[in-house]
Length: 251
Image 1 (cartoon, rainbow, N blue to C red):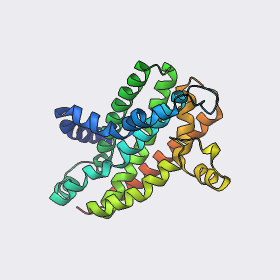
Image 2: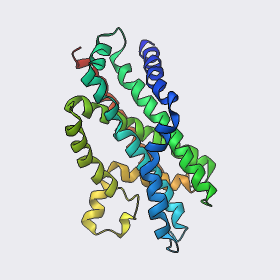
Image 3: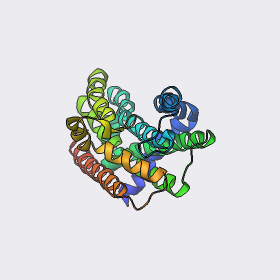
């Protein structure tokens, strides 16, 4: 109960700056996937989707996964100023659960991610993309689980590297292969065998496949089970590592 109560307190503390300037967090976090939708999406016009469907039905779920990656994987940047200012160390010395210090941040990031995804879905629907409401809700839940895992790992990386330029370099080295091998922009089925094999060991690619199946109303597709399992596994592993690391930190 103490972890839950302290997580709620930390969540409120993290939400305070977000609520003071909600448009900043919504708009800037969405820039990358929205730009891809606006500037890259039209290039797909007239091209059949992988299953002969409207290509935007295939492209938009991929952009939602890209949004999840960028919105949560860069979360560690928010912790670095607090570490440099000594705020994080003072929080570690406070009589609150250390795990809650991490969970409160991650929950704020996931809530912002869901708000951003809702805006993207509403915009896509306004431009004619058909959205399955049950599938979209299940897809949001899948994004939230993926966001918990990636957000937690981002904070762990920030705490390990401590310096912005090191964190930025390491993050770019991880994020770019994750995105390029996930198939968010082009189907990996078209890739050479070795590249397709690499995409299969990328956890994000399975979440992208599941998101596309859900977004288009499919609930009995094997991709959904695999994608959900991968997202849960990433989140569980990240939370286990996060809890262990937070308990070992010295104030």
